[in-house]
Amino acid sequence: MNSTLFKITFFCFASVLFCSNSFGQEVKPKSSTFEVAPNVVVPEPNTDFYGMKAKEEKYQTPVDLVLQSILDAEARKTLNNKGIIDPQKVHEEKLKKEIAEINRQYAKIDQYLGGFSSTSDSATIVCRDFQYPDGDIVTIYLNNEPIIRDITLTTSFKQFKLPLKKGLNVISFKAVNQGSSGPNTAAFMVFGDKGEVISSNEWNLATGAKATLSIARVDE
Image (cartoon, rainbow, N blue to C red; front, side, top):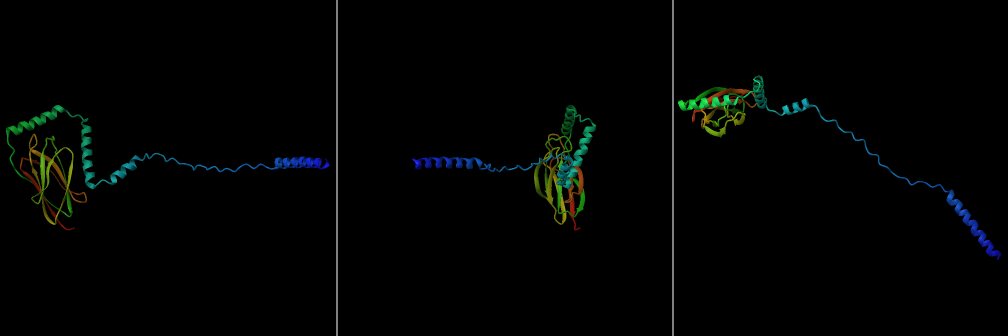
């Protein structure tokens, strides 16, 4: 009996002691790691339109700049005239050409456009129809060999690069036709490889006629 009472008393005492230790322990919170998002800097939109334009112009060739200046001058002239294009006047001009073609035949006369010298290795030909575009077609010859065939002239510039040999180079423009209202008309410019203007002129040709210029390539 005394042994049993002793066991019960000991068990109760041990239980109370265990509970006291359990509640007395510090409960440490579990550590957690939070990633801090980096600061994101949103770039401001690029509004430097002048700088962008300068970068674009940087990649333009000297020939492009000359042609652009011509187009700008024509645009200013159109603006000064209030940009008015009278369809009736266009029709009248075309009709005058058609009547002139009926009344007389254009003489097949070749044109000599002059002789020039240059140190360039190549020549850039730029041409367009300077009157009412009516389907004029030309072929370009270099030293009597057809290099570029059957170009239809429009009001837009067309560019062609030709190699120049040392010595004399003869460039000819042959009128394949006279369009719907002759003669075959064009304005052209010839540039050297540094963008310098070698020649600037116009031609008025009957079908089969040629406009010719010569360029002597010389050493610097």
